[in-house]
Length: 282
Length: 222
Image (cartoon, rainbow over all chains, first blue to last red; front, side, top):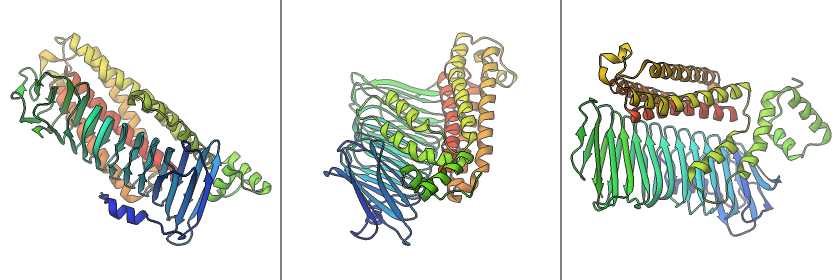
């Protein structure tokens, strides 16, 4: 599994002016831009101009980029192994689909729908909402968005400034989310680590789940929350807050920890089957 | 089929209306006979349709993502297997959701004292589910296994369209999910009335179907 490195990716995706074919069309400031690249890496940058500009920098000279207006949207298509940089009006809604390339989006405030089979993803800025779907790439949502959905198979997911609604899952990768203003979040990893660090508002809810991996919660000691942690198939619960976990007599292998912290409020649940649940003070 | 497959560039040109009339006619004739290229052209067109379906306003994710997914996955992919797969997946998902997440759980919670199936009785007889619930469970599981087997067979036929690294990744992940299913199922056998376990098991099933479906969809795009 590759590890995304922001600086390296930015350098990788950087395209020198005049390095390859460039094309541009006028576009509305909150219109739709759809980017499809076969194998190349894609960098999408929001700007203040009312136009879409695409620049390709092919490695071997056979790359090709096209920007067309189609059915009220702007389509950008690139072929070959080249690196593609697409400037879009900052308020655009953007769809990017690539086969194997990395995708970097920065400075876009509209909705994002990103898909790559094996590339890494990085989102910077404050998009209205983000959907990421991949197989093996890592996902780094460094920006802040009100609604986030990430699904990857083996990639790691990292969301350092989560808020609003979050759904993030990985089969074997780690899902690590940090934030203060979650309204509703579900973090799942089948065999990896599902980690949340931060606080949840009293009217918020958070669910973490890992079948055989590690569920880790790091919250302030005085958080106003109702905790409901369960290990369902022989796993463990270790908590620095609340009472000791209890084992159910009628259900061997099941242990639970339910308690309210402070006046209660936020619903925080965690589940594992054979893994470990760790509740820690932040 | 009337000719060799047009290149992606020519298909792009066709979608964009940039081909001269004779060439456009040739591509059109090919498309009439070639489901693979038709699907490719449809994919190009639907990329924009999917983009246009992206919502402009923030909304609770359940409604939002359902709408988004419906809009972006409604497009046909490469060949007939997609239709069959989707139908079966939907059927399996519906059965699993009903049977595992609510039906079985409700039945188990209602009737804890009924006789248990053989494999469960030795573990915890007093919490065993009623036979009807287990029959429904087995039917749901059989449907799931059948669907997953079909998808895995399709994926095996599409391996060449995926990078070896991707194939390894997917296969490793499927093994992880299979292990999770085994864990959850073993735990459910020990504690058959546990609603949360049935939810975990159902989620693992859905994960496997989802990984297979996504991999097939992505392989169809390559």
